[in-house]
Amino acid sequence: MTKLYLIRHAFTPANNASYNNQEGLWKIAKDKDMPIEREYGVKQALELGKFLGDFKGKILIYVSPYYRVRQTLGYALFNMCGNYDIRVLEGLYEFDSGVHYAHTIDEVLRMYPESKKYFDDAKKDLESAVYTGGESRNMVKARVKDVAVMLQNKVQEGEYDYILVFGHGMTNRYIYYHLTGDNLLEDMKNCEVLSVMDKKRVFLPKTFVPKGFMVDIDSYLDDSVI
Image 1 (cartoon, rainbow, N blue to C red):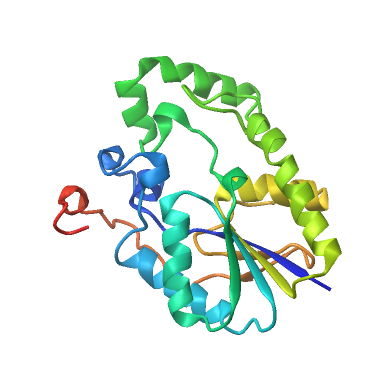
Image 2 (image 1 turned 90 degrees about the vertical axis):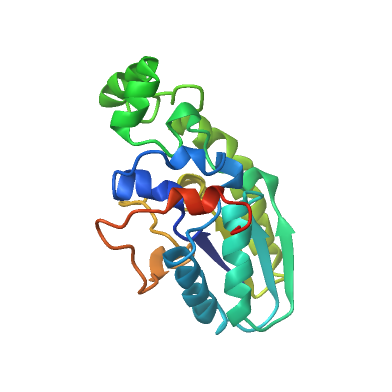
């Protein structure tokens, strides 16, 4: 029987907006172009590859079109050995957080005062609250249903031993919901692997980002470094 796994991308500079409350990270890149973080993100992706390298057989990999996800897969493949059928799946793109992306809460409220409406709405109904200039969680849940149905059909066809879905935290959350009927009790961490069939988390990298870590924003803006 085909086994299905959902995987979140490695740590990115943008993640540090919430993790270490760092401002200015939005200057590095737009959502779809944000890279993984050069030290911790790369190490996480390499660890992920070692774990996935133990998977043998016929393997189909779906990957989000966003750069950080494709980059995570690229590093993971350094430690994987197999003949993989890799396909970019447009429907896996992450939720649109509008002006909130890569901003701390204080920063977005200061730069975009109108975003206060989102936070007020979220206190009343988090799933329906619409990010300023973006989507609500309910909108994401609705649009990934077709992806979940497609994945379920692929599993039932049984052509592959494994299907690996390289995606994002929010989209993975709702794909999992449509496939299992269950809600994740906590968000997926970077490079975490979730077994849909077993309904459990099966891998988490040992590499973690320490509290107090600050991204060197200028180094990402220097084209000669990237």
